[in-house]
Amino acid sequence: MDWNGIETILLDLDGTLLDRAFDDHFYFEVLPGRYAEANRLCLDDARERLIGLYRAVEGELDWTDLDYWTRTLNLDVTEIKSSVRHGIRPHPDTLEFLAFLRDRKVPAHLVTNAHPKSLAIKLAQTGLAPYLDRIVTAFDVGCLKLRPDYWAKSQLILGFDPLQTLYIDDDEAALASADTHGIKHLYLRSNPSSALPSQPSRTYRSIESFHALM
Image 1 (cartoon, rainbow, N blue to C red):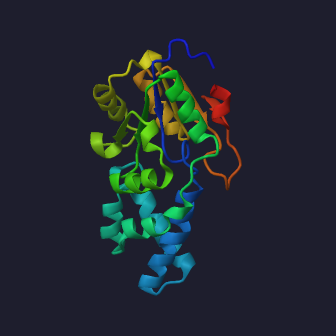
Image 2: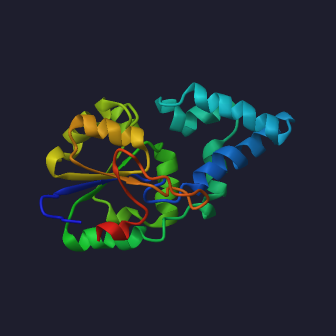
């Protein structure tokens, strides 16, 4: 990786810095299980019902809003997530990469769709916060990263030059949105979950490990 001309790095959280296996397990196993218990359903029926609810708000802020899901499911979703926080883990190369960026004095900003309550749980569990210069969530700007407005508003907050910015995410839709905004250096993390095989992009440069950039 040629770091000449890179003045800012933008990093996604779930799937990029953190192993997405936790979120997949939480939303497709843990939460349906709690919902099944509360509503006297079998697990498969509860999971099917929740997947339908997830899809109904996919792409909107409600999709990652823990308060919305607490109201919708009549469950304390924040408390449930906190109760299984031991499963939240960075990828094995994450801390080494963040230390590398700090040593190079490259500002590293977190750009995430995560709800503030979910973000707080994950940062407390993983110890990533000291490595991050600033954090912009979808709730700070009013939309998810797949919306072009996210990048315009984030640029105003962070003051980055799109032509001198490197952005890494595991979501191609978010990368495409950033591409539309003019962010030049785009990489897909192709192995967001330790429980799933790697899926490289046909459009963007892909990495399975941050070591490829170090």
